[in-house]
Amino acid sequence: MFPIAMSMYWTTYRALTQALIAAFDLNSLRSMTLTKLDLVLDNVVAVERPVPAIALDLVQQVVDDQSIGIKGLLTAALAQNPGNPELQRLNAEWNDLVFDTATPCPYPGMSPFGEDQSDRFFGRNREVDEAIQRLRLFPFLVIIGASGSGKSSLVFAVASHKCGKAHSWA
Image (cartoon, rainbow, N blue to C red):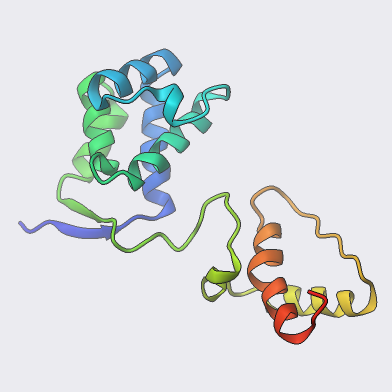
């Protein structure tokens, strides 16, 4: 059987993050990263937060590290905690997958889209047009929404880009 190439998407990050949360507490996560990956967890991610946030940040960090990668983190976690059913299940699911790290994930996570990524930010034309119309009437605009809903992306990637082309006051 040939390996299947798979792009990195949020579901991939989430699956490994959830498996790490199920398999490790903070101290065992520190131990795993040190003994299996030769990384000091506290130097890689901020650890003054709940384990789910730490696990997600760790997954995001290793994806960018070609020497480890997402499967390398799974292998290390499984070596540290071989009896964990979540890690075993994920390892079985990913056995024939080769993750494509050359194609970047189109979603920047909790970082906002930048103006240079405006081609990947779409589907909010109504909100953008409304924001531009309101800015034409008032020099100040407040954008309110839930965390992760795209407020900063709306401002940085789309509104500022469109206003910058149309108006010198952007």
